[in-house]
Amino acid sequence: MSVRGPLEKKIRQGYENELLEDAAILHGHYCPGLALGVKTSVTAMARLDMEHEGMEDIIVIVETNNCFSDGVQYVTGCTFGNNSLVFRDLGKTAATFVKRGEKGLRFVTRIDAREKWVERFPEYAELFTKVVRERSGTEEDRRRMMEMAEDISKFVVGLEPEKLFEMETVDVKLPEYAPIHDSHICEGCGESVMSTRTVEIDGKLLCLLCGGIEYFELDGHGMHLRGGNK
Image 1 (spheres, rainbow, N blue to C red):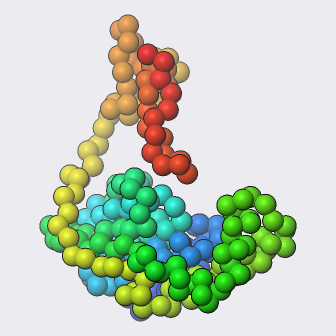
Image 2: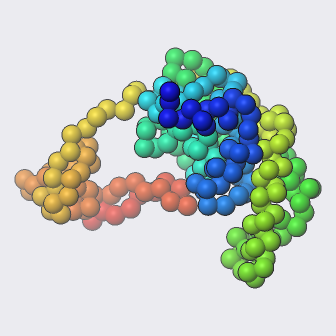
Image 3: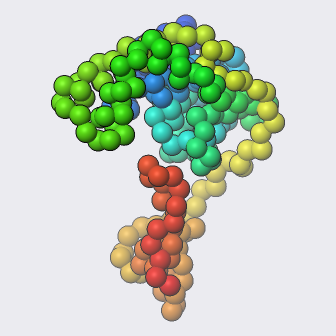
């Protein structure tokens, strides 16, 4: 039995609130973005009859690095660590789910989706602006926002997927199965490093940091280059 057996059972039985609660443990809090990621993933895995074992047979392509992606990662089990998650830095709350050798299903959040929970919970937008956007507001504002976020999240996963997403069957060009690379010892810092992230300078095999080479970093602003002095 797959180690994901209990989770897969929740997906098949449509236990979206339980999956949302579990995803919130990973994410740290409830929010509409997390709920969208959970709802997208439950819908996709049910419609494509997917079960994931972390062996790169199922791939998810996410187009944003915000809360949405945590919901996707938790439910699908597709992560950077098992090479089943592809990140495209497009800034869209969207994801494509695909089994190797088959067509994929792309979900993009409807432009009017936000209106669904704003109309139901009008106070949330004001609190979100104060607490998150402006980094202001009182502790009471923060507490109230977090409580309301849980109510909104459960409201979102209870909606019909067609009210939240545009769905399209797509052809997907997937990366090959991830290669297994040797590791080397950097002659600068003495740390083990993947062979594809080394550089030879003046006869020494160095990691990118010791070699002063630029490297990619993903943070809240997206993907960008860091470091480098060569």
